[in-house]
Length: 352
Image (tube, rainbow, N blue to C red; front, side, top):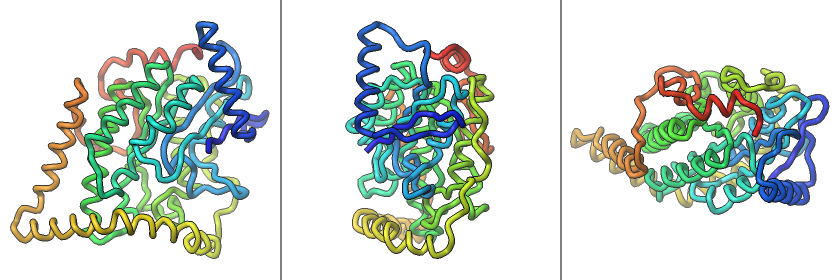
């Protein structure tokens, strides 16, 4: 179920009854379309789409999930006019579920900013297909961008490294994640998105940034992501509120809380992944070991790279960008030397 909130006088977000608030926002959006235009006053609308990362797993406050998107929402505008935030992200969501489940609601809300961070779960499925992921992301980013929203995207860290899996198991996941990130990089340029290199943040160096499951950010990690997006938007010239705090105000969960989480929710996640990922992952690991014995251990990397090129090429006018050695985010177009066009006008101009 979506979470809807509006900014309070102190810059925080106050939850509103989900269903009724969502229906009222949709009704207001319909009235705006019938009037033939967008609002020029009122709260800035921010909608977040994606999976558990954006839902807020790893940052639980007072029994509910918060996450980087909610933290960023507090800082997207001054107290007047404030921010109206809707989180449509759902744990376990795949890229194929964006268009069917989250995108229609997001478009109905007519957001000024829309975050789309998804693809990690795609790599954790036996039926992974980089071409399908590319098509779904291209459709979602294109629809939101065409509607007038400024899109926020992020590339994701390698789950095998985060989980410290043995190399034969980690390498296939790393290959898949590289493919998804290449797609996200290319499509971020294509749709003039503001892109944050989440993959290159120091997750494995600073353990406190990860939650008990070692796969999702901790509260501090969510704050780091929120601050990263805020910095990019500020650099682009968008009027914002104060930056999110560097550290969560709440004390980190103790060891007992981490153990309880793993014994309840974490165990369920492991059980689900063991049924659909582990058999395929073991098969991939066996194939790689055999290829290594034959001296052809780089062949699968080459095949995935070619599949990624084909996937992006089939979308038209999209190329695989070169790897970025730095850990800084950028607004694609401006950072790559290409004309900023619509993104610069959209960020720097008045709210539509």
